[in-house]
Length: 352
Ligand SMILES: *Cc1c(COP(=O)(O)O)cnc(C)c1O
Image 1 (cartoon, rainbow, N blue to C red):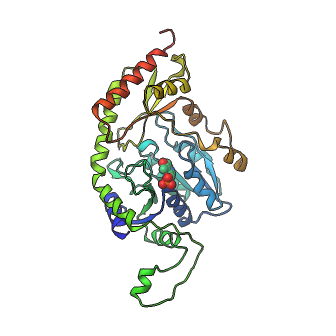
Image 2: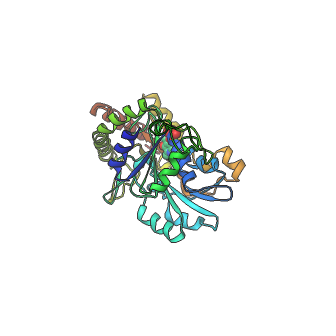
Image 3: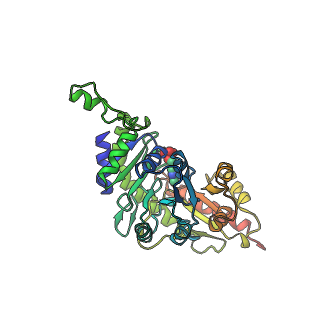
């Protein structure tokens, strides 16, 4: 486990890494380490997987949803600022689709208000912001090694940080809140251990870590291939007025976990669901990421969220489609996707 942690810590330049059993466990450990508890608020974007917000709830805190920028679907620092209250303790920045958030703006904001900045980088391992690696941009950065992510260990996750004290808390948290593990006890020839806080069994196995180490070697090559596919899509779609690819800011290296287009519904005869089914019928594995978290029944019921809370995310949700993007796609696969997308859109152009 230590070797896999060292590999990811070195790759990201973060200093400390703590391996856990999933990205969700990593988010939970991060919320524990920064001391989230009942009465605390944590600002999260709705355009993410539910786990980004659920981790706050596990610790008894309340997620508060800030809206996203309409062209990148990343958390909007202006909306974050407007949601800060005396109860706010932290901000979770989700690098949606693999595009690092605006960390300069978010850091300025969180340090001005004394908040922790947690990066949910489950999409962006290997990405960069202004030349700095994802992992070294926030107080805590969370990765997932679920099979759909860039690097997989079957299930798995990791938190990286520059703060040894936070790392120590998370090591405790993943091991029942117990101060020593069985190896340290056998080295010290003692039976004694102490459970100093309530933790979980969130450990990652050594089998999984061995897989993770070999996967990390391939990551740079895989990211380069994803970026190449994205450039092909960008070029093929540049002329279409009926949809846009999400904006990529100049100052980032995008990890392209997802390639997302937004339909211009006003120019089309069909809504997103028909275009989705037509593409699926042609064998194109399109998807929709994500149903805004604040619209899920659990959040509506428990936290009284609902439509109108985050208008940009809700508008985007009606219009987005994720196209297939993975390193093993052949040039022909990429051509098949672009031509299917162009043909389906053409068939649905209003007046066409
Ligand atoms: C995958 C993912 C998670 C959860 O990771 P698991 O390893 O599946 O628990 C959390 N946040 C985001 C943005 C993700 O994509």
